[in-house]
Length: 64
Image (cartoon, rainbow, N blue to C red; front, side, top):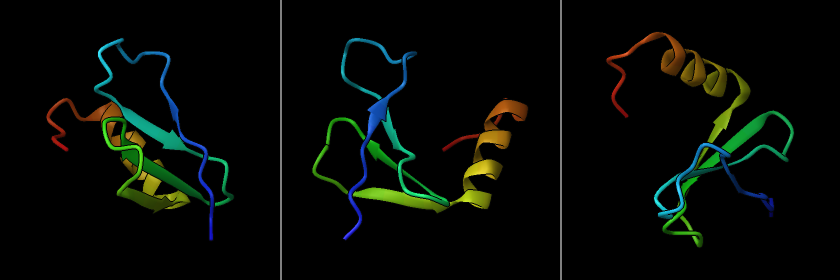
């Protein structure tokens, strides 16, 4: 079983409503809601994570 080590962004506020990301497993990135640390979480391959991040940077209308 894969053990992800999740962390919050330094941009996160102190109210506990943020997304946590785990990048400690090669070739994948896991994402979860910080309010639910026991899960569920989404796992994206390297290409999907790259596309997701690029869309966030370039498309002001991106809705998740």
